[in-house]
Image (spheres, rainbow, N blue to C red):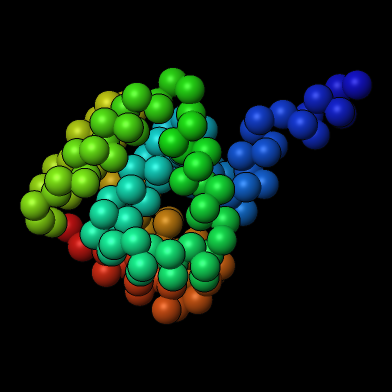
Length: 146
């Protein structure tokens, strides 16, 4: 019974859906699952806003596990309101400085220090490069210029 519970735990499903990105963030940065999910969800929301739907769709086709990650991050029970607010703020971003300021506000709301934005971004870029190649990484990197 214990094994069955582990097999179907939300933690296990989250890790499976994200292909290891949440695990990489939690192990390398020492952040909680909620912080990892919320932070990467905010980064993806910002990227989608910067890229537009067509380019973001291309990124998701190159790295399909990001689709599950964006869904899981947005559905997190304790951070869904925060991420919803971040998503609406990011939709109206006027430039890269606004983008960075809004991401920092979201990160601060998750209890993450200002230096975590760069660390999250680098881990996300490394992950995307490993899963989807250099072209996918460059697409994401171009959207996260701040």
